[in-house]
Length: 412
Image (spheres, rainbow, N blue to C red):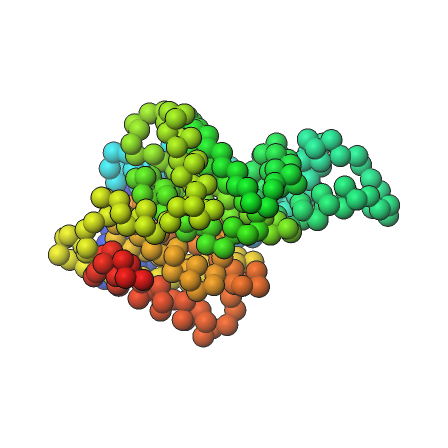
C-alpha cells in the first residue's frame, strides 16, 4: 500500500555508512530529517525511520539466531507490530542482500528469510497457539510415536518401551525436534536404540531445492567429545562451505549431528560417489581412525601461513546471553579465510564447551560464525568472569590465526 515509502527506504537504508557509528542509527536520523523536509505525514515518517533503522534485523535473526525459538519470534513480532510493516521489511531485506552482488542471495538464505517471514506473519495474524512450544512438541511426539508403532499407554501405567521412548524423546533439544521431520526423528531413535557402542552412522543427502547437502551423523557417547570440530575439519579439508550445523545429545549420551554444506567442487547436483566418500571420511574422523588435525594441515589449500593481503582484520567476538534461555551465544565476526571455522571450533572444544547449534553466514569477504554453546554440565554459562575468559581466548585465537596462519597450529 505504501510503495513510495518502501522505495524511499531502499534508497536511504545505507546512507548512514561512513560516519564511524552504527550506520542503522545514523541512517535513521538522516531518514527522519529527510521525511520532515519532504513533508511526509507523521505516520509515514515513523514508517520510514523504522525501515531504515531495522533494515538489518531480519537478516540477523534469519542467519544468526534460532528462529524456532518462540521467544525470538515473539520479540521480533512485537518489534514489527503489523503485517504491512513485516512485508515491507522483508522486501527491503531481500533487496539489500541481492544488491550486494551476484550469487549472494542464495537459495538457502532465501529459504531462511522466508521461513522467518512466514512464522512471524502467523504470529501477527493472531495464531500464537500454533507456535507455543509445548503444544508443538506434543504434536511432534505423537507423530514420532506413530512412526515407531508404539502403543498409546496411560501415564499411570508402567511400560518399559514407552518409558524408554519418553526419556529419549525428552532428552533431545527442542530445536532438533521442531526443525526435523517426524520421520527423521523416528529413524534416529531406531538407530540410537540399535547402535552398537563402537559404530557411527553417517548419511548424506543432496537437496536440489537449496543446492546443499545435509550430512546426518549419529554416534554413541564414546565419540561425543570433540565430534563437532572433527567433522568441521573434514568438510573444510574437502573445500565445502558449512552454512549450518545442529548437535543434539540423547539421554544415553549418543549424539545426533546435522551439517548442511555447499560442495564448491560441484556447480549442480553432487554425485552419489562424492557423498559416499565424504560419509566415510567423516566416520573415520569422528571415530579417530584418521587424525582430523593432520588431514586438515596436510591439505595443500591450507599451506599459506598468514593473511596474504598485508592488511590484518583481527575480527571480533561478541557474547549474547539474552537471546536464548538455554544456551550462551557466541558470535565470531572475522575476515573470511579457509579454516577459520575449524580453528574457532577447536578452541571452543578445548575450553570444555559443547556446541549445540552453529550458523555460518558469509557476506563478501566477512564471515559470521555463530555458536550456541553450553558448559560441561550442559548449562548456559552465567559466570561473568568465565564469559570474559571465553571472549578473550577466542579473540586471541583469531589474532594468532590472522598473524601466523597455520604455523602455530602445526606446533600444538
